[in-house]
Image 1 (cartoon, rainbow, N blue to C red):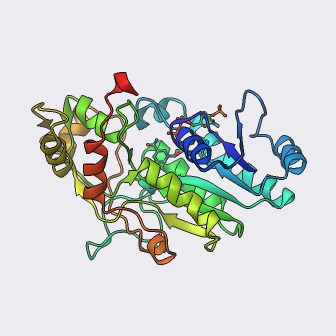
Image 2: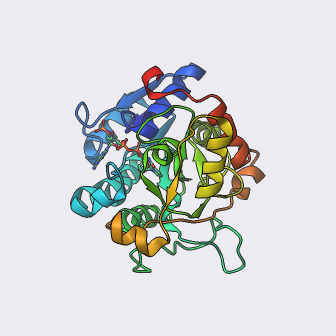
Length: 292
Ligand SMILES: NC(=O)c1ccc[n+]([C@@H]2O[C@H](COP(=O)([O-])OP(=O)(O)OC[C@H]3O[C@@H](n4cnc5c(N)ncnc54)[C@H](OP(=O)(O)O)[C@@H]3O)[C@@H](O)[C@H]2O)c1
């Protein structure tokens, strides 16, 4: 049996779908039913149920976007930086291996040679580098909290998208925002992300950090071109002149835009679809929100 924390959330729902499809028994824990943020409570539950693996899809994401984290810093810090440490403590006592959903938003830009960041690179969009949003800072701290843990996968998710229209889907966001910021990013198909991360456990690949993004990178304009090509929308997309205008008009806090490499995951035998192809497939199977 698998333990799932944060299964009620956007990413957690995708894990619920995956485990259900695979016919793998799991227990979806909700804080309201069992306070998994308390180490003793979590240890007692782990010792009683003896799950073989735990997935942490819990955390604090600002809604509708990261700007909201600037207004709820204590909860953001707790959900993203303190909670992973507590889960680590509980899993260590109970002897349960686990996986933590982290984020690629702890990086900005690309490496000096233009290639994407690897798992060896230190975050460059964090409180340590003093240039980040509060959300990104707490996600980097969450990873730092887990340094030295030898029974955990740290999976970096990045700008999730899929074929289901909805407010958390990157493709929907592009369709609904009045104006867009041109930027270059590596991004993750949500269902491929959950399948790839669970495969880490199924294949028993070594614990550690994994960038779980679709290979390659895309600019906002390239994604818009794919949306137009798909026929999902005929809308005229409008862009900010530059990041300065975006920050002045539409944002409270800087955004992470970054290129990442997912070679480590591929080398471990877990392949994801090339990013443009993954976007094309999502758009080809597009389900408008009314039908979801
Ligand atoms: N969505 C994205 O764009 C994105 C991108 C990269 C990484 N991530 C990471 O993926 C994880 C899940 O994100 P999500 O988008 O699925 O978030 P979500 O929809 O807000 O769900 C997160 C779940 O976490 C649980 N939780 C535990 N402690 C919390 C706290 N202090 N504040 C708020 N919720 C808390 C809640 O479940 P219960 O109350 O039911 O237990 C909640 O439903 C987070 O760690 C996030 O940083 C998300």
